[in-house]
Image (cartoon, rainbow, N blue to C red):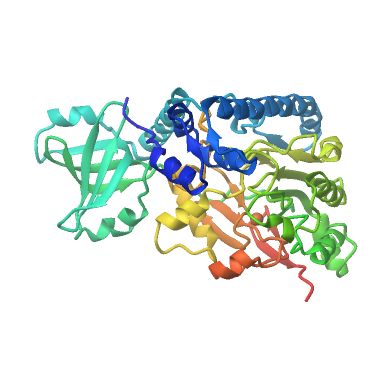
Length: 500
Ligand SMILES: [Fe+2]
């Protein structure tokens, strides 16, 4: 089949050279199909090895697999608690969309093929239903008469600018490829062509001009259907926080304690206390702790230098949230689970007290929850960095527009093989299979809101002060804010806790 995943061989060789590692051919072959090749090499280099063999890599992969199996065992024990709670409360965890407990990948070529096939099939079906497309397989293009209109669905394999200044795409499906040209003077497609990233699955309405070439007239995205907001007839509020980075010297402890006092109804005016009582759900979208060894020289920036202790402090904070509030926690890049998406839930051995708490639910990133009949998508937001670097006109200060780009593609894995790694699970957990009513994201340390086709998008704040890295990047975060959303009218409230 087509839909090649591409290899990272050149990147791996360059990286190994920089780290002064010597690698044999078999080792290179194993790494070339691993999305986490960089972290494997880094781990080996940090352990003082310089000769990389296939055996050394396999030994490390086996260790990861065993620890994932251990995590699965621990998680299975706790699902009963959640099921009982679901029975008495108005929520449901959509486990089928969460990788936790189900990571079976070996990272083989076949796993990559399955992942890309699943992505293509799911998005193709969405495209066909959404736009009533009667797309022909690309291989049928040669039987279409020239100048005849044609509809196609394919994944973007290549994108470039022609000498004449037009944008060209090489589009592929499971059997064949063709070229789609987006004319430079087509004003209607101007915005669309800027948006297109590699691996996007698109619908094309166009005109055949030669045996394997089509001029695009319309570009169609899987997208969300246009619909009205689903409002509920009750005064129910949802709160959301993210990126606490507990353990970091920059963790805004006093602000977070003020937040805890507030959510317990121990602060503010009588009206404020009445307001807080309406909160029934709290979403926590990752980077719960700062972690250990996440970036070079992190050690000197940590207040708590043990991961166990970081999670102990974090757990104690979460246990202060009133029990009447259902708390859903997903991991982020700083949490002690695999870095690559989809990420499984933080395991029980790190947060045993949270697994025991009736009202706390540890989920993967991404994951889905249904509350009060509304579908909620939770995702840390790691893939957004690749969206920012590929689509011009987006900014970290307005993360909601980058999230819209994910909803437009119905995909949280917008491009494979860029900065952010993905594990090739046989089922694509990154595709947005349902239409979410609410989307909560973190990661960017900057609040942002939007309503997109009836979906409320919220990007959360952080509880970490501005880092040196953010200063270098010129990024100004908006820390110390809890967001509250009213499900009755989707009104958004910002609650500020930063102590000056
Ligand atoms: Fe963060």
